[in-house]
Length: 150
Image 1 (cartoon, helix red, strand yellow):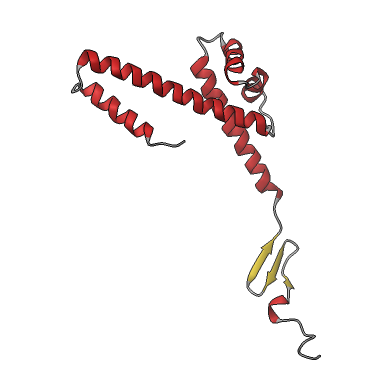
Image 2 (cartoon, rainbow, N blue to C red):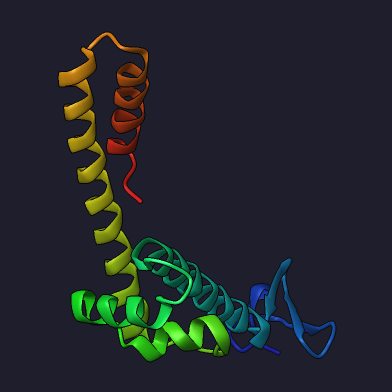
C-alpha cells in the first residue's frame, strides 16, 4: 500500500468490549442512561427539599399544610399540586419551570428570613447594647450569611 493510502496510526481502532472503544490509548465510552437518571433524581430530590423547607416556613401548624401550599402558590407562582406531589408521590422527573420557580421561591424566602433576622438584631442591639454576647454572635452569623452566594 502506498504511504498516502495507509491510515495514520492514530486512526486505527481496536474494539475491546461492546461498550468501550480503544483508540491509541484513549477510551471512548457510550453514555450510560443511568447518568441522566441520576441527574433527574437529584433535581427531584433538590426540588423536594426546597418544597419541604418552604412548607415548614409557611405552615402555621400541623393542619395548615394545604393552606400553606396555596399561600406559597399565590406568593411565588408554584402550583400547590407540585408541593403535594413532591411530598406524597415524588415524581421521576420535574419540569424545568417548576424546578426554577421552586429555586427562586427558596432563594426569596431565605432572603426574606435574613431581612427579618437583621431587623430583630437591630432591635436587640438597641435594647441590650452592641457589646452583648448575643448581639456579637448574631452579627457574626449575619456577616457569615452575607458572604454565601447559595
